[in-house]
Image (cartoon, rainbow, N blue to C red):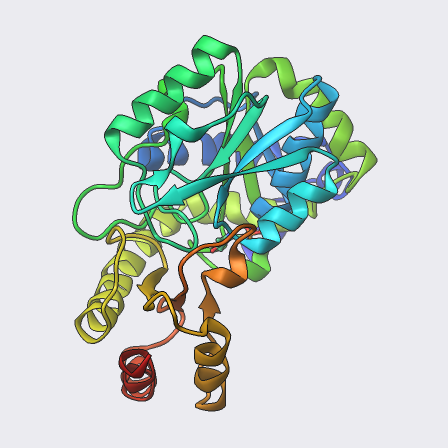
Length: 327
Ligand SMILES: Cc1ncc(COP(=O)(O)O)c(C=O)c1O
């Protein structure tokens, strides 16, 4: 922050471009191309307040371009669902399973939102067959895919699968965030959208947030330029892998070795709310699968591991394990 402030020009204190700081976009574009395989340049990359605000902006942009219906993975994060619902698009739930979104069940909608690298809350990576089918569905039907890549930098058993966006840049609006890379409070996220949407994205931003805090963007640009984000990512991956391994050794997890949480399925007859309440009484905050579903889905819990050092995790797992096994 200090270095960014020292270098900032007077004009950097103005509102600036609704797409965000050019300096940050210039630094971020090659980082995303390198680490997520996206097809991106400074002109198609826009900065938002986390991926959540980026989602709202993209949803409103699609609406202004004539889209009415958006398929959503069910289950998927309830905050994401709420944000998208508020945009005015009609949401159409589509089942998701251990291979990700059930692409073969997609109805005739204008767009779909999906997290191919690691779905929430099931923790699934979209299977290669479904990835190909999804791209074919979008390209052949002139539809849009919103790729919500909220934790795609984190894969522990192999190199991360590249963003879907690279396969069909004209049919994908890619959304990412600094939240799992650094910290959610930074509130910086981004979209890479086809250039035909640029003017609308700028317009929606002007009418909603008007402009993003620019000093934070300059600091992040400086952070990337110094190589700190790459270094931090390498260190975080190693630390999170150790934490994930610890959880996976103790609990019966499913899903890809990716992201910042694991999914632990519960037997069908389990009262998920009761397990969540019992965990909370033991001092452990968990999320639930049914708590994030629109339709009827099997119960399960979501265990986040990234923010807790190993000794804390070990204590939590010792208390949690009997609750899960007892269910
Ligand atoms: C499921 C899910 N959605 C969204 C986000 C990020 O939201 P935001 O970018 O607004 O902080 C996270 C956090 O990493 C997440 O786990």
